[in-house]
Length: 326
Image (cartoon, rainbow, N blue to C red; front, side, top):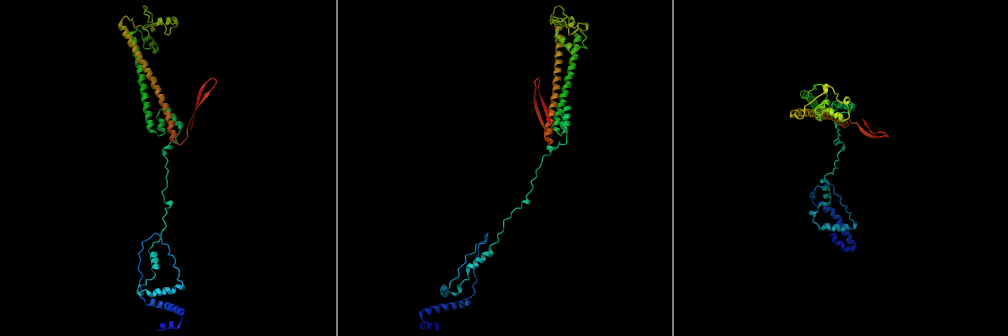
């Protein structure tokens, strides 16, 4: 009642100020009388990192206080929520998990790198190259066996055995054919050829007889005379023990005996060639074994080997020098 009368006694500006003061004083009382209303819970999805803080709301100025009061008078008392922006911020902070730093693998836990060296490259470093070369020169394959190369040693030993067997067979064949030629000459040439040399038998194969008989033009004596030699200068002395004769070619049987004798000597010469090949094969087998021993020792001794071939040219001779460094 007092508020209705007083505006009539006061001026208009004073009444406006008094009304604003009354509204400000009545607002806390009304807020205290209003029932407590729980702020609604707002579910927010989990985020990896905390959201940025909301911008600060500027404080209301004194001039705007009456307007806020008037707006509060018109709002219903039971629907005034308690600061939803602050409740949303607190809920997000409570729900957001703490961001953890990424795990960094410790390099000390990684597996160690192991470098393995082939033991075969140094298994012969305690062996002597000179001794291995000597073994290979004496018997191919023993040098490789000394250097623990059993497959190579087996191959060289088998080859060596085969070459020695070939040499033995060729040698026996040579002696057999030589003895056969001697026996055949003794039977069909009228001479004791048991002690005659192979060169003597070769002359018998070239000439049917020693002495010139009936102008047959196939005697050893005629060939020596035609070559300019006299009786005392013959390669085979003209003595009774050196005279032979397979008979005249007029008799086919004599010719067949002489041809058989010649064939026997041809086999004898072939066996001599086989002996030469066997000896050469044995020499080559030794050279190959020496070269292989050098190769094996170089790759299994962890040592450096050098082979230098230096030509030497002089005013009177030409040659080369082979140097082995180990």
